[in-house]
Length: 199
Image 1: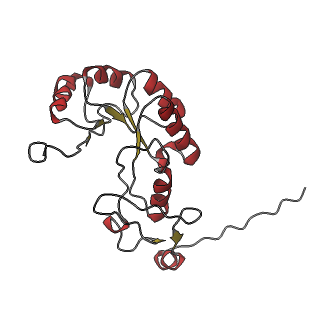
Image 2: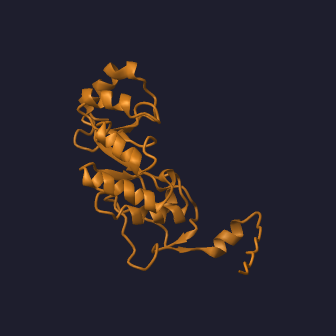
Image 3: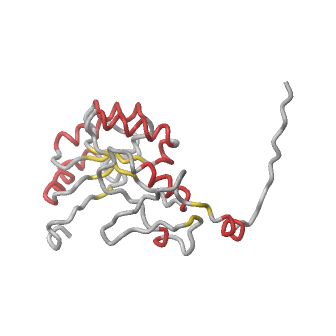
C-alpha cells in the first residue's frame, strides 16, 4: 500500500498481536512511514510498550490500555505511547473521556476517537466528543449507512468525500432518536415502575 500510494496517511492496529520478542520485526514498520501502530503489545501493559516505543520512530498509540485518566498519566509518564485512542464506552462515559483528553492535551499527546460499532446514539456522542480541541487525528466514526440500513437517529450521520462530518448546530446531541424505528425493531419490552420514597 505504501508503494502504491506514497503520500497517504496510513496506520495499523495490531490488537495486541505482538510480544516484546517480536520487537525487531515491529521496528521494521518504521519503513512504512505510519501515523501510528496501535496497541502492538498486551492490552494491560505500559512497561513493555515503553521499551518498544524507545526503539521505534513510529508513534505507538494505546487503546485498550487506557481505561481512565490515571492510566493516561501513567502511560505518558512512562513514555509508553505518543498517541492515545479514546473510546467513550471503554473509559466509562463523557466525564472520564474528557479527563483523558485533558490529561493528554496538557502533556502534548494527541488523541483520536475510536468507534465500537455504535448505533446512531453512540455515534452522535462520539461526534460530540471529537469536537474537543485535542482530537487532532482522524477518527473512525463512520457514516450510518456503513453498518445500518436504517439508523435509529435522524438525520443520519454522513461523511463527505473529504472524510468530514458536519457537526449539527442544534442543542443536545444534534440528532433525534427515531422512536418509531426503535418500536418497530423492539422484540421485548419491560416496564420498571419507579418506587416513591416518602421521608
